Length: 177
Image (tube, rainbow, N blue to C red; front, side, top):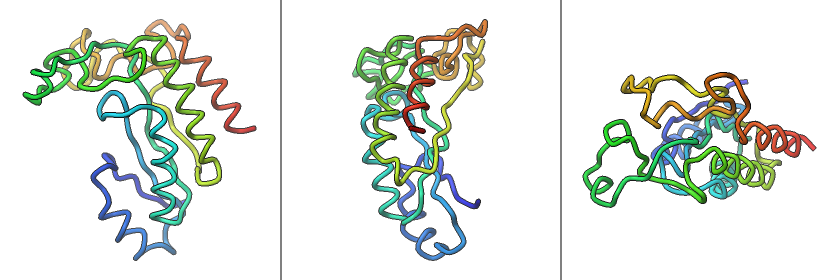
């Protein structure tokens, strides 16, 4: 199958309008990604309308190439956010959702995201969760205390399932039912 993933899909409407209309017969799906409540504003409920929107724009099944929610990190102050400081610098997120960036918050996010995906099952080709395991250090800044790239996993650093593991397992099963 052939498709396209415009990372940062919120800014990729040119591709959706032009690429998919001009090359429609060449493409089998439209790939998107997004990190609601962490890298961008929003929450898991945004996935349903997003998948529907992309499917309606392209006429193709949608493959969610990357999605997830970090289980660690505080939230920036308004001043930090207004300054445009990156998460690696302040060790906090600009955005959050629901109960926040905790293992329990991550599990609730995963459960709600699967509900949103199920609401668009007919338009959905599949979903790829980012990532299987937590990381010892942030790959962007190299620091162990940075939430930007350390706490996205379904299992912790020792391979022990986090609450999101069961939420993912149950959500994936319901998506297949």
